[in-house]
Image (tube, rainbow, N blue to C red; front, side, top):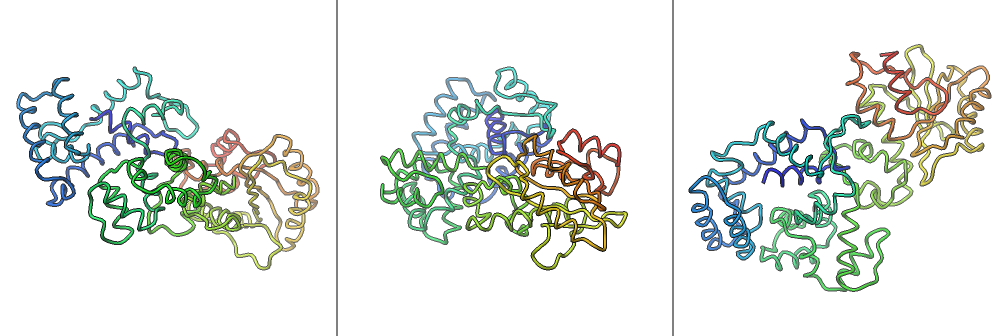
Length: 440
């Protein structure tokens, strides 16, 4: 059970990677939430009470000698499936018997989780990567993720399942609920939450819909082919949501925070992810959202308040540095690698030269990915900025977000020094880390 929770926790994490401390906390949090739920009177409200009583009796007998043999485990698993009891409902019954997560209802400790992790590492399933750029060291490699999902019976991560149910119409949700022998009354949010709570398998739920309804669902998903058999459409819908990068954003988060979480997707104009996660409603929204995300990053993560700029002929952002000079930036979202075309040199030169009262000390360009030859026009623009002698740098959105997320762990300073970006050329993490060590 612990190994299942560890793998499920990692599969529910973007990039399937997180640090060991966070892994322990998430597993313990998952266990505690289920214990709390088991204490509720309606924890098994959607289960057949007769079947639960039978299953509970079998578990009581199995737990009498404080251990479950392989034969007993196999019998319990077959009975669970026969009685149509979900794994979650099984854990709730075990918790009510004081047998979950451990005898006496005790949570698994850091040592327990570490022991299970080391077992999975020896099996070649999880990796310990201490030198990853983002510092995360527990990783489920990309090539193993599909196989692990298949073994665990997980078609989609929790976030992906939630997004799938939320994307269906009320009529679709009611049909799926009835096929799962669950109540079909309530608001759309209540219907989707009921499916999440029941842990209904997406393939089973979608199979209860008509082929014409699956066609309509496919046609509403960006980039999804609508043709094919019923099973092909089901596989295509599940594949669409499985491939999405779904970030954890609080429901009450301000708009800028939502954009910030999808900063790299906005930079790369990843419309499939952006539309599916309701970050944008149409392609034209990408530019504004990218700008708002950058303003949020500087204001909330780096503690630097962007200036209000009048008119339309100006960079996407500007702030005053500690010495009274300016740092400007411009967002360039593109689906391809950024090459710094000459038209942008002319555009940015106007922005710099139009600043009469204060010198532009630094101009940075924020892009999804950058070609090495783009550095040539960084040097050209620095030279052509004349009296400003502005440093011109290009930074990827992922590297800028990395700075925003990690600078506090790299320095003892309480305030971020914007001078870290005051360089000319391509700013990668190695250069940025060196500047932070020097200036902060």
